[in-house]
Length: 505
Image 1 (tube, helix red, strand yellow):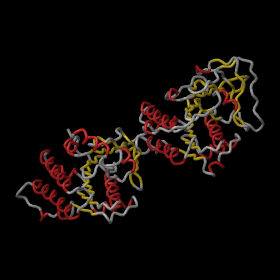
Image 2 (cartoon, rainbow, N blue to C red):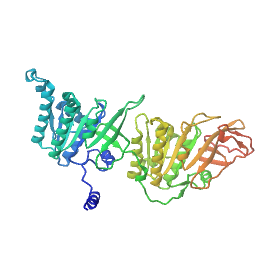
Image 3 (cartoon, rainbow, N blue to C red):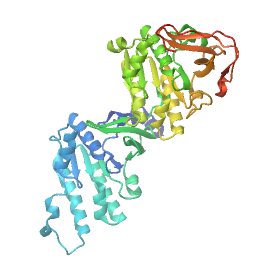
Image 4 (tube, helix red, strand yellow):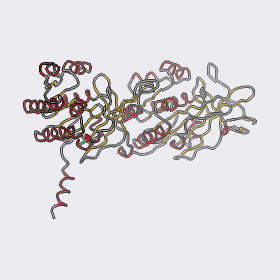
């Protein structure tokens, strides 16, 4: 009779949460940990378990919740050195070192019983005595690998962990048990712990190692599953929750906005629509970055705030070339309306990049974003399949936030047959195709719009000229054949545009 109201009360009044000290991890957990429970944090050496444990305890001290760090594998001085490397002071924490000098004293050891039978019981008793003495709210136990070695068999080990769990729970402690995964598969810990947080460190053949977290288990709370990138740097761990576009919906009014080029506006059916993305595809040197910069400048001139992410080109070269084409961008950088960042894909994880875009939109009010190029972004990914999924979520998020996005995708080859590393055209709302062609012994550029979901775009192919006066789009090229096959040729009579003096063709 009372079961339904009880369930209703539990849902309407969820249990309070305890912060882990890491904002991104709290987000992944849907608010933090359930207090007064025992959790397992597992990961290989170097994954950041000790750092996570210290952040957890220091966050508690800041909230008036005293913390105790119990260490079997590291000395107190080593812990202080780790904290100092992050700029922290752990003087307020209680540190209990079980692997002290007395444990190594030959005279203190006995030989009547097997050492493990005595040492395991003494270790457990010492932990309990220290907890009763300090009365902590938060506890970190580092690490379980030593307990596993002392126990020598799974049954004794499980009984000792269960005894510790019941002891901690009776004293209202929230506990993180750290384990370095020396055992190939330890399901005993997974079944005993209230939740399991798995940290992974993945070495790359080139560039910085990748780190990711996965919540394997968390009783009684909803959490965001799957892998999430995180970084371990000076200052501690920063986690980047996996982007789920459906969680970020925003009402806005779609409107058509000029690209800054009258000819390009006509090709696109009026311009770029707010809340959509445009993919610019073409071989190297054809003007993809210049076209993106022209759209960027137009947004800035309208009063928008914009971000440009350069993966390939240096900032100096980008500014100089834009200025030579009549597009002065530095004044907008100086007044804070334009943020240009050079991205090194070997040093940045996909999760970090997605978080950068989220911060730009949510904290800085950015409404126009350009990414140049997706080729370099691909190199930061484990494979094309994951790139497609992450780009889908990222573009969906930007579209739902009303952001106008320009994406650049380079193709292999200059003239003749060209191809892309990955096909992302189906993710794009509009696709602009650029091609080289030859006419009267001169190499020229062609532009066409092959797709637009939101406007009635032109189906004609035009000459594109980049010069001191900016971006110019010529008349339709009659007699232009093979542009979509990768082998374009021109046999028409349409007059070619003439570059302006001091311009660049």
